[in-house]
Image (tube, rainbow, N blue to C red; front, top):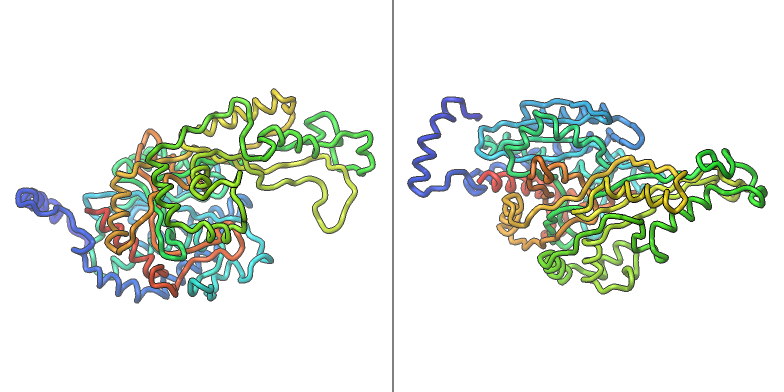
Length: 502
């Protein structure tokens, strides 16, 4: 039952009395009827699972301009259904986003960041249809839901929404107010996230929050949990070499025998790429490129503690690798993972790539790159340096087409948002590992950087895998008591919201 205006006013003297008596002012997780909420979670399991399956059946793929408006409208409907009173679909210069608020009359407000878009997929590569969300047995884990977006990020986000449904169904008071920002361009580098977050009404709502978190499935197969304090930034771009721009080579594909007297845009691109990194491909050699700040002693200590717990052998097996760069030991390899920027080739496209051979000299060649940035490095500085480097080396004709990207993000370990995570986990008997930052990226910078300067992070129990890959999954029924299935993940969000409400 929502309190009336009069009841909210009447709490002012009661709050003063609590302070005078030394009684905690706000309810903790233990003060709510958690057993009633847990019963509601179990009772709503099938409905919650159906909600997730229906969401996965509507893929919004920004790179393919697929269902962007439909995805935003669906996200808005999910928010309304979960209890958000004010919900709006907001247009940007790209894909639309969603802004929603839930006023519970609470003293604390928490920000949520969602994404409704997913990565591209090829059904032929999947063992189960990627949009059908079938439940399949995964040895060593239990029963999983397999589908595109299952863990990145619709599964964890649906669990958060299920937590809101369960609190209401159990007749419990929401412990916090919520401000939700959801975008449909995360998978192409969030090029317009600033247009959402920095709208006056959105920014004003976020200013009142204790921070912003993104739902996640944070448990590994053994039940360990890592609390990440940030993420690298990213730049997504294409380098394009063409006979038309170069003024040499063909303007269209021609017979390969003509290579004896015609220049090749494909080789030009390869030679340009070779100037970006050292001979082994592991050190950036772009002239004037921004430097990564040195890793701090605090972060080194976090990495040392975490690598003592994490299995190097299992990590290698999972990744399908036998050695790390420069044959580094496990701890040093992880220090490099956290502290170093990267230039990565996602794909190379030129000429004919089908079965067999086709003797052509391509008139155009494309390299798809992603550049990871350590917090402290700026996206615009990196792009400017890349363009200047290519021009200086004689490759000024090569197009640099940036599709998205943003700076890295960092949150201090003593932020209340992080303290609440640790409290929930430790109450469950889980000793979390602190980690300086994810090697992957999400646009947390828009919350942590000025003008907002908020804490930002990820939270959620449960397990999932295969993000951006075939057979992506989210754990529904766990065979390991140390790892939470879907209902356990839902309860972790319930407990986190009540902890944040303290």
